[in-house]
Image 1 (tube, helix red, strand yellow):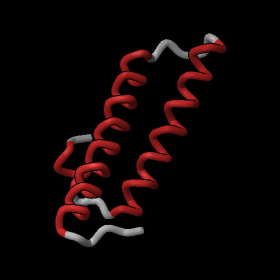
Image 2 (image 1 turned 90 degrees about the horizontal axis):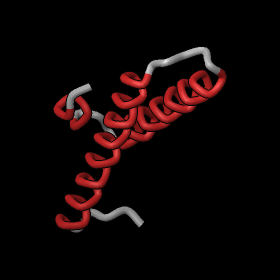
Image 3 (image 1 turned 180 degrees about the horizontal axis):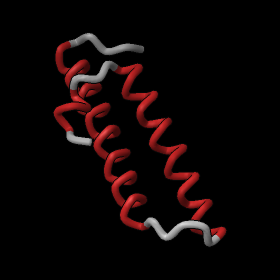
Amino acid sequence: MNSEKIRNFTDAELVQQRTELSDELFKLKFQLRMGQSESLRKMRGLKKDIARVLTIQREKQLAAIKTGTEKK
């Protein structure tokens, strides 16, 4: 998933995307521990996607604070 696609998401979509990615990562970790999967590459990709989503959420939050439209 590229960052330009993520930047077009709304705040609610970003939260939903982060939740879905976190759930998928949890399932992969569980499978790895049970010996059912050896998909380290996919786990690394999911971690990076989660980091991208969190980064863009923070950028939007800082932009809102800068423009004075902070949600409290």
